[in-house]
Length: 316
Length: 275
Image (cartoon, rainbow over all chains, first blue to last red; front, side, top):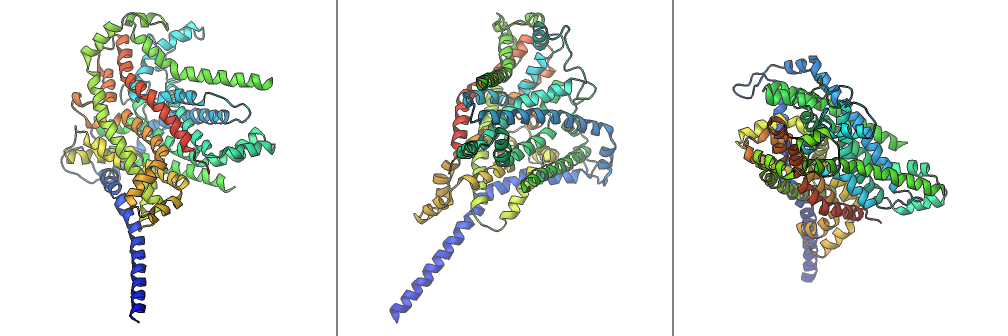
């Protein structure tokens, strides 16, 4: 009887030990996420909410905070220069992402081709990635100096190669300046996209490709049936992060055009340059906060559309 | 035969692309050694003789080494914090079942879509309230919370980490933090390395936030310092000096790259953990 009771007790204890242990294991997660959560609340969540609050005020960076309702938002939406800045950003990013992703995808296909077996992946990958390592300020000044109308080495090279007769004002013409910025962006980022896509493909077992080849699947079939579906999450990641980064474009157009006005003719004034002008040059803090929120809403719509686009394809 | 020709064309295209990546840097280095007059009048890939003159002009104007060390002081701790805490958070989100997990992950996804600049004005407002303007703290500490990287690493944990390994370690009596340090981190290291390189570059390149927060020229990080070329008039007269300043700002990165590129490549080939 005593023995029986002892055994029963022991069983109970063991059970509760097991329970406690199981609970402990999951409780440890709170400790693990705590540093993230605290910093996240202070430096991510608070500033975002504070900006929201300020967007309803006429705050000028000092003194009293007066609430003025949606007046700032109405002013932003009525300002044609805001829409111009947004259009500029979309224009520059759109050309950029097509070139960047197109190149990266093409390279991924080339380097994964079973038949050609292109060599030198590591060295090419390193070279393609190099422009991404350089600080954007250095890149901006490098291209600004290289593409200078009168003294730039780029024009001299083109003249020497016989491609043009007279120097072209690449950064001074509204027809070329935005696309110079797009190409600088693509030049900086295609290697990065390529690395991410390659990592994605290398996660796919080579057996798939070999089996498909043995089964007689052509290059296009392999690409559409194996590579693309398996790359979709990474393509989504690359496009969404690039879109979010693209809308925040600032450094290169700001430095190349020499200020927030984004010359020539304001063609290089991006949305964030517009925001910077009001937030940190003329100190219309309330107004700049409203600009930030409108830009955010646009990003939100674009991101949701992109998620939709990719997930819908997956369902098919 | 046709395959060989096609292959040749592919290699040629790859080489042209590689040259496009390298040429601007080559021109930059060559032009650093030429005088302003030479650069304006002719094109060449042969170095000139004005390196010393250009050096004198640059260092009369500003101390780029200080900018470099300032950048290191910001970018290195920020990257370490991002890598460690993102991995820890991502692991917790992927492996443990706890109350609020869905909520936390949801908020992270929402913030993934929120541009950094959305909170810029509130961030500056907060930093000035905390009296941390012109300090490196607001450039470093926020690195602990990088929603985008947590999101990426969470997916990575799910696809790469074998749970049976964790069960085995638990049966052997290992504590949870010990499991994370001894088992999880090494398995995740290829992904963490890739993401760290990205985070480091992001921190190193960061221009807008330091531009807003730093006032004292001696505290300027390299990008902010290089960008101050814009406002200088005496130095812009000599293009050779401009090229040289850019070269100096780029050289440390090129040296890091010599080691880093190997790491990127090995990290990615290890990253492809096959079943």
